[in-house]
Length: 134
Image (cartoon, rainbow, N blue to C red):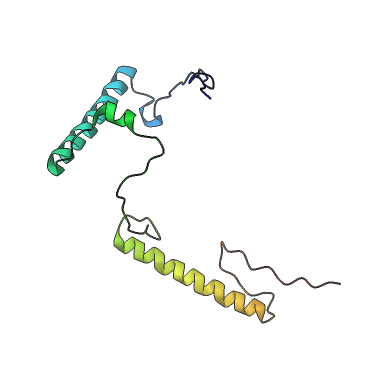
């Protein structure tokens, strides 16, 4: 069944507000700043392509791609447990998480042993108690 592309299209008007930090700046200055940022990004990308020898494929090649296709090769490294600014910060967060888990497991064990006032770490939810009929 051939469905015309505009059958499910809707016209939408999009109004863009300036960034809060640029609200006080004249529109011409904002446009110049955005153009400068875009030029910087394009220059950085061009330098990266030149360094790696990666060609620009162009709009025609992009339009030939199927929107649901996947890359031939992808990164296989697992995502980090925490996104952090440095390796040291990531280790610190992991250490805090390990302490949280240890406190939670200790409290859960005490709860299973019958201590209904076992202190669980802040931000955690104690496991449900077994149902006892009246």
